[in-house]
Image: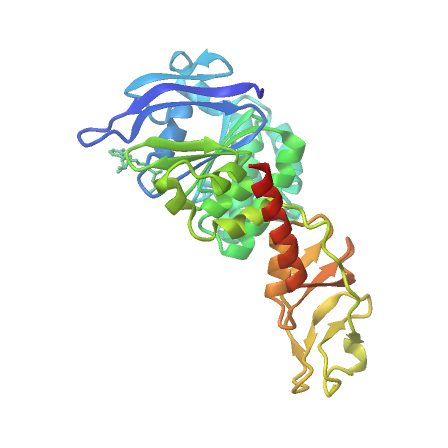
Length: 364
Ligand SMILES: Nc1ncnc2c1ncn2[C@@H]1O[C@H](COP(=O)(O)OP(=O)(O)OP(=O)(O)O)[C@@H](O)[C@H]1O
């Protein structure tokens, strides 16, 4: 069994008047894993998160971190031992990016030069160019600011990272990048991360475990994301995970068995795709066989943008998305260098999905 890092023991928070924001919450958060709090607006996710670093004090109950009752740890000391990332990056506008990242180490007494050196390394860790270190937060994009927020939270190398809707203000493409980056980082760092979101998709992508909260601050289900999608504990969870849950569930099945077929390719630089009349879809590629788009069999209209790409090791969800988002109905598979490795066909991906479903039914 996984080791517990944070434990809520019958924790209730009642603000002045009204029903409890968090109601008798008892849960154990695994060390070195990502635990996601998800649920509709107002169900007590942020309040629960903030009780972990004493930004909010419980009305009753106990929270322990690494076995220690946090009500006995001075709040300022506790907060410095945990990284905190929020939706608006919360960066100090008049400090450079490097100085923002160095904030907590400086408070902890690390000399300026050493703190800045570490900050520069962290810029690289979160995938930002070193030139950005001298800029001010307003000179960065929203996605870059969130990366700086993550770097700042990591600066003191805390064992626990609290993240409150950190990616919800950026567009979906950047959000996807940030999620993948967080998973990559976590594979190296193995922090205990508690992540709040109202987006079930984000929860299932990121969470080793997902806690679904219902309004009134009650824990409705707490388990691995796959389990929540496969077997919602009650009607509330079923409706919250929604009608797309079958599609989301595919993200837990590898598509290793999918067949890659050869495809007709034309090189963009010789212009063949412009007036082609061959009666079949052709994939337009650059000189290195990287896909650029499709050439239609019918109108010779030139380059039609392609859909999402499939890579070896991807899931059935990505395979199906690649096939369904492609104008030709053929999903493009690429190798590690981004070169075309073949195409996959939607009916074959669907047949695989059926197989997986049968196996699952047999297993239950
Ligand atoms: N400082 C406060 N004073 C009074 N009530 C509060 C305070 N903070 C939160 N609440 C109430 O507590 C409940 C839970 O709020 P909380 O912010 O924890 O929910 P949430 O799930 O994070 O919601 P959201 O996704 O909208 O941020 C809500 O009803 C909210 O109005």
